[in-house]
Image (cartoon, rainbow, N blue to C red):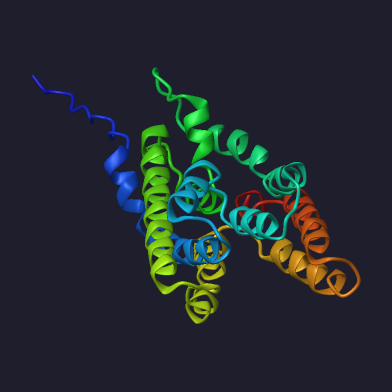
Length: 240
């Protein structure tokens, strides 16, 4: 009598795997957070206040804007409005990503996953997600990036506090790290998706930035690129 072999389903990736997959984010986040810690202390914040900004706001470029606006004497309402406007894009990340994740019986709290969903976490998850990459894996990625951001902020704030005015040369040297990280996360997507939307967005922002503010040109370029990506058929559809 023959036995029918059954194959056990692959176990989903857990928190530890997500933590390991977040190493690339850690390497990018840590030095740029050092730069933020230096800037925050240089603008008059204490190391503890700099850490609290990173822990509560946790929004990369928005934190630099927040500290600069506070140092310039901007009103709290204008600071909150500017930071909120810079982060409106995150409202679209959650629904897109969660629709692709497997749905376990017990789901993690939505606010917890939403808080850690940065640009880079979204890019990494979107580039590598499979049926085995569930919510626990995503939480591991987020916690690795978050921990590196906090640790870098503490190191930068302490150095800035000891050095007095901070190290402007170090801040300038670290400025390239976040764009380089985002480019590294984007490259795997280019093997799967058309480069036409990306090139179109780059051309649009290059042209419009000569006539309108950079943030407005970037917003228009994002809309153009997203529109083209939605209209163009995917590689699999073309083959079919």
